[in-house]
Image (spheres, helix red, strand yellow):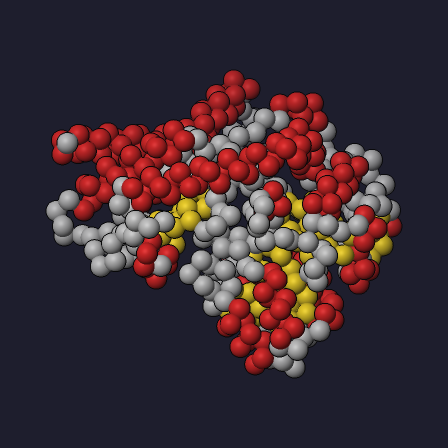
Length: 443
């Protein structure tokens, strides 16, 4: 058994070294140096080689929320056109090569999902979750110019960048072990700044742990602290879970029937798109403050960016149209099932791991070897790493990952000089497998 582990480890190292050498050679070949241009044959060879590299990487893409299981070949005829959705999608523009009709169809779908009437909402297809956050928080700041931004310490890094960009006072609120915002600490912060309006960023699934901020409890906390509806604004960062939670019974209900101001999701995460994109929905009554008519495009400027990708709305439209509600619901439940499977496999192998309810993000002890982390494209922070289980992640892929992880751990820790990290502070003592806490089998 010992010999098998060592041989397997050497085999993995050789494969990783080979890929690194290939990447270095490709980097040299990609340099743009020819004055007369490259031949089609040479360019085709480079693209084919890169596609092969990407295919290999996608077979082990576990740590980042980008669903790789999609097929948009039917949309290939549209790639010969430059499509630009500059302007307000509901007004159109004087630039005819746009896809705003598709965009509005996508927005209508999300408005219905999040329970807001057609004549009460406004939105657009963004370049991704960060742009959605930029817009949502901007709406909040325009509504409450002297408001203080509150967000949990587990929030996406874009939230803190946005606070710096908008020069807003930002209060970082502590989180629970699950990653969700600690409402007791939020209450204390609100009371300490009761003379200022509150702009709340809520995480509908935190980046690392998939913790879901309790929207209903946050609203109750605001009320308890004496904040009326006109004294707060809530933006929901639902990058991954904003589209998943509505398909899970008993899960937190994200709805504009509650006093929220905006929701954003990333289109390339759960749905899967070949380029980053997203959706932002807010209340129509807030948009006039941000909007300006622009004669040159015969439209209204209400978006963060000017020119906007016209292909992204078509990708989103196609993904939603092809799957339907039933297909999306099935995908959500398959992802949750596979995440629970991974959790059980890791814990069964004696590896500390945690999975939040309604989550497809499995958090576990960080691998000792960064090469292994890169091989499986894991996202990590301090003592923990995670796997995001999406449609492209198969049971076979998870089995291979766990098997290699167990083999590597044997090599790393066999002489006893180095011990697996304690992750109790990150995931709780019952989910930690270090020598102090051991792994609780009661899950």
